[in-house]
Image (cartoon, rainbow, N blue to C red; front, top):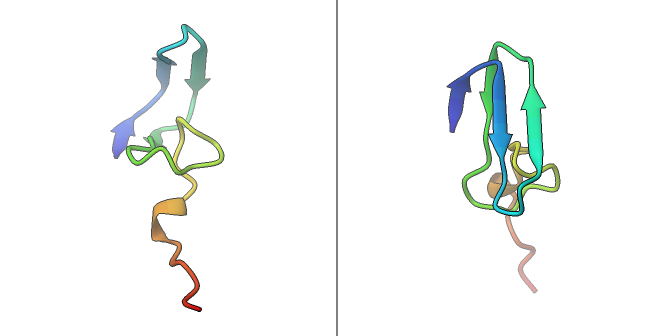
Length: 49
């Protein structure tokens, strides 16, 4: 999800994450290695055996 920045996100465990970018990509699938920010992990395809 793209949202206008800057943003201040509070995670379920109370951790606060900030971004001062003009537009911020927030991960909605929880596959991102940089969660809560999107790293496009949702686009990766699994290798077929």
